[in-house]
Length: 214
Image (cartoon, rainbow, N blue to C red; front, top):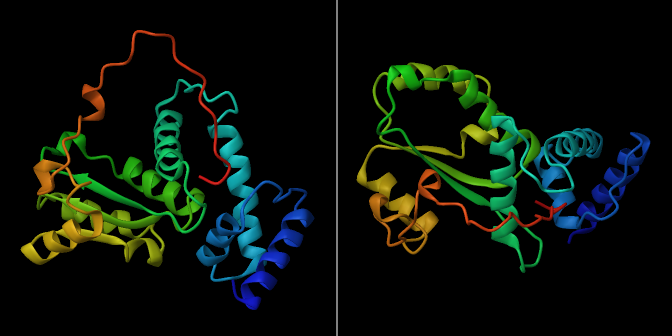
């Protein structure tokens, strides 16, 4: 790690303490994500970090049980997916590639607020976790809504979103995600089960642990 980065981390920790919080228990790569997301500005990164701590405490209880509301369920699934992906690996610059398939969407399904909220959760509370977001089968009527949604997204987030419309973008999708991880229906080799089709085990649910560095 460069000297300038070490200095920024030190300043970040001090700024967090001034906000009556602490960075204890968080790895350097985790803290660096907040610095990168705020252009290496320690004070802005500290505020983002403390806001994230408060949000995480309200959204993800230490017990690991899934709360009742849909939004908390979405965050729970996202958090556990990231934690599972990095489990057993050195904490570092782990990122997530996201695929959004709009093939069966209709006017009745349009939810601009929900779409904006989903992306804002990613950019505000999972800084530098998203590598790319690929949107497939975007219908013509969705274009106007998408233009509206983009007004609420950070420039860095918008640059990570790719609307797949031709063979070249499909090739980049396959290259970025990898054929072994990409589902068969999108040109890959992975045989996956849709979340809604997964049958829960009959046994009592086990306790889930949280990961501070997710």
